[in-house]
Length: 245
Image (cartoon, rainbow, N blue to C red; front, side, top):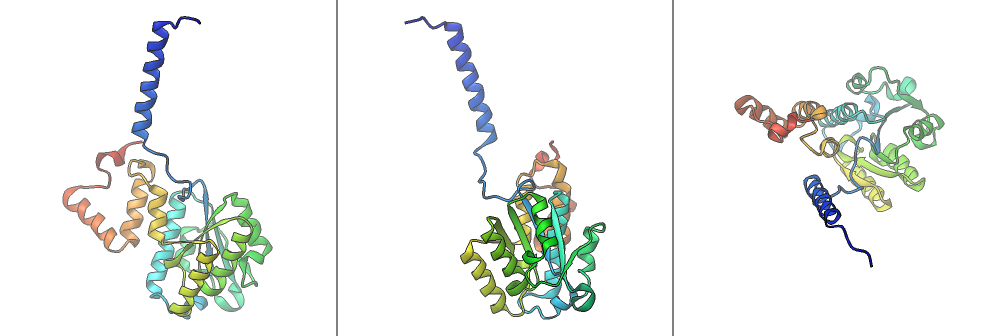
């Protein structure tokens, strides 16, 4: 047997202690199921006037607000985004101008297929993002969302359906479509959930102002609360930590 050097043992103990302290400061590892700007892409499907006229499960003004909030979240976190329309020139009209304004340089992919997944250009654009988690929102839920969602799942993608940025012709049509997608493995989320899941830590100063700004513009009562706290008490989420990094 060989003798252990006391100084080596002491040094090893110090190093192990340092690692333990560093790990305790970092906390536990987050779930791989969480959405991040690095593992997901956002798909906006057929947010067009003709499609919105028949929406019956959600107020159309709220739908527009939520859709734009989701779009701004994707842009703020530099998440790959695909815009698509169906029969824009001949029937459904252009994409919502408020949505297009978030991505002024990006031309929506126009199609004839109700199932966008069957359109070669749309499918190629999704593959080009090189992301396996797809965040989908669109009109109508029971047609132009459910079809690509099921198709993407069969192709090995993880699908997250933004239920409050999608609209169906009736509440039942929307709800049944969401249930069908969930049964196939899709995960229902809301637009605010996506925004805050992307931020996840108020110490991430690079996106702090964008996140709270989007919440103030589109987050209803939550946004009003952020505005009030800032104006009255100069308060902010996470305190001083929000200015870090």
